[in-house]
Length: 242
Length: 224
Length: 81
Image (cartoon, rainbow over all chains, first blue to last red; front, side):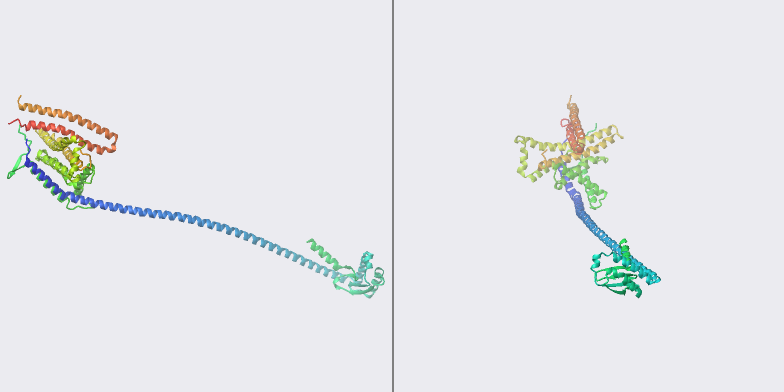
């Protein structure tokens, strides 16, 4: 057993040469390729990282926008709701006022109409009454009527208190309807004289407005007995009844 | 009993220089490795590596990982030495799987050459990285009393590196030879399979130890 | 008893005793590694790598003995055939 120094030197040289050759043909190209690939992967990774970052930013912005939009929507809805509420209250109020006005107007119109109708009715009734009485009177002879009237007037005059009668003026106007004939006038004068005093001067006249009746017109007072008055009374009572 | 020699036979002489069998085998292995690497790295692709490129990248990456794990530095300048140690020793250790080939690492000359290269590389790198004085100061640690021991350790560990590799491979060769001489058929096959494991493990250990020595010398790890 | 017989005996003793030491050492190393892996399975890779290195170191002792034995058997400087 011995160590061959030549072989030792040759093997050492061989190893150094092999190391250089492998460095030239194996390590350098392979490490270069690996480094390139690592750089590529690193670049891709960084790009992906950047893309993710950008996406994150986008997402955050969208989330922000969504919250903003939601808040805006809430606000708009609330505003619209309050608007609607106010408007609704206004409309209701207006409608109520209008309705009240309409009701009022209608009621008033109705009342007017009712009154109008009542008046019309009253007038018609009076006209009818007038027409009826005139017709009735026309059928009755004037003398009979005036005789009755004279009796009534006498009764009325007798009922007047004496102190009022004392204040009567010196003139008495006697208005009748229908007109008195001459005989009738003398009868009236004869009957009235004791009641009003002989010194009172009598004037006779006709008044169609009385329809049928007589009025003793003193300067200070009137004693009346006529259908007109009766009709007016009747009408008044009619109106009151309404 | 036939005469067994532990020395490789001399094949031919070049002038006064005797060329042993292990040197010739080394040349063949060198040629094969360089040719394989040359054709394997001719069409390297960044995007679509072919099968050959994947194998080469895996081997180089393995060596780089050894340096990174053990020394804790980037492999860059150490890769040619460490990588070539691993690839060359592994190839030599696996070469006896081919019939008739005697592994060069079974001879003390080859492993001695590798040990010497590691020895000088360790000190050269240590001086280069730390400076001469700083590097010499590491021999005075932990106490100046340890200087003779530290110096002796530098030689013994190189010697043990040499003897470990050559002894393992040579003894396994002898074991297989003895088994073959006893039972020639089928029985040696498990031993041959074991020789693959032993070959790879020994290459790995040689590489790791060299890396540890260099790392200790340049100060990236505790001196081993 | 001549030199050759002594050499053969020495070779047998060297291999035998070397094997005892490294066998015990490797056994303990593997047991410790198993223990460590069972306790921390996540660092199994580092442990087995260190184990392999350690085993090879231990085995080197046996290999030294084997080399001595081989030298004694096949390259004995005191035997001149």
